[in-house]
Figure 1: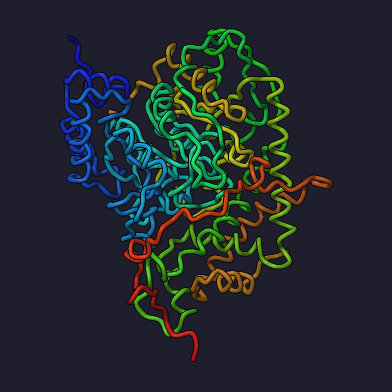
Figure 2: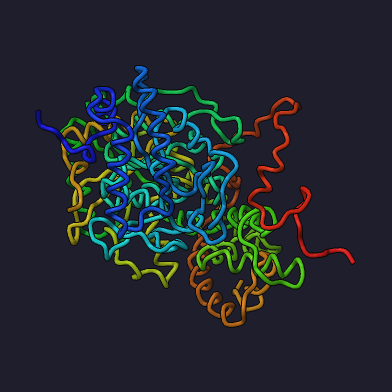
Length: 486
Length: 95
């Protein structure tokens, strides 16, 4: 029997191994904990609690022995440290929450607990999910497993690095302006940002509430569908949760690409796109053509304004959301202060890092008297233009295809002192969040320095099943998703 | 709408962020570049466009007015920096 190493198996493969008693959940968890330990140099995790994980694994083993075949039962998963977990600290990558232990589980954590998945650890991330390189974490930068001198992307950089390095079978992340798709692209794995409202935000530390959306990161579209089956679903505790019936996202995997119309937005292939990324995307388009899809050209004229509009709307919402960190109810409190005002100011100045403060200041400014219409309302009008573009485009195609990022992973430190350069790495991803659409990134080749390139698929509202099917069909014909760092 | 040092200090005050004079100066330089990017929005004609606050134009979901949560004060105060007898302790605000 040709035994594929456990850390190279799909989620379905791991489930089969557990059901067949080839390995126990405790053994599987120990195996991945050992891999996490060996790969400490990546700094992909903020918190790992072996006793916590193994207790969950023992419970899973009991259920497996009783004949329980729930998907994901007994499989260790890593979670972005933005999902609050009862009994284990949740830092959100910030000094502000360095010692915070939530009294409840996030919806997503609760759903995985119910299915019997094992919590392998909490992944490193840009502080409060603000960043595109994972250099903004209070707990230090995460390194790209393909080249340790490069960033893994952000803000779900720890989750992406863990999956890419095969130290976690899969992970969760959140995406406000590209924070699942961009790190997935830069580390050669898959990630999906579902339709806004599909995955409950309950217990997901808020950054920009009208844009934030949780989703999975994994090695294949098939694995993503297994994870999304658990994560998606109505939750009355999230006021913007969609009352949409549960779907089986695996049902679409075997779809045919014959007659599927793939739209190429001309704005996504112009100035700013690195030639190495363009080449890999062109090859993927050729592959889709070969597989029977029809390629149509579309236009998203307002999408080029997405970055400026995003960097008004997201900081505005952040400045309001992060007002809750006052040093009174939870989080960091300064050691010395003379009155309440000083206590607030010092606690927040000490607890937040530079990028978080920058965005709070931008948000406060654009919402302040005299600037509200010129910036905030203007950005919301552009948001509608962007959403209208997508609506018009989907009259002509089933899915939109383009690059996820303008270039492959960049060196740690190369953009850290220039916020605008960093923000521009999000040029192909922020428009999707502004419109509330689902989008995913899958690996489609390698560019400069042998670094992975991500292909972005953007779908219409609630078309996750179809998108996953379109991605899976590509992965049946190619093997980019099976490549892993040395 | 040029951003200046006073505007940075005022925003920091409104956001309750302590900021030193040197930090304010450095922040001004960085935010200046960010606002150059943001200003690009002004070139776009948005006359007669309705602002969009949300990806979906949905209305707020309502529920019946009934008790759904029990008291969890002790659990929530477990992570507070300073509490006594069920109260959050802060510096004196009333003389």
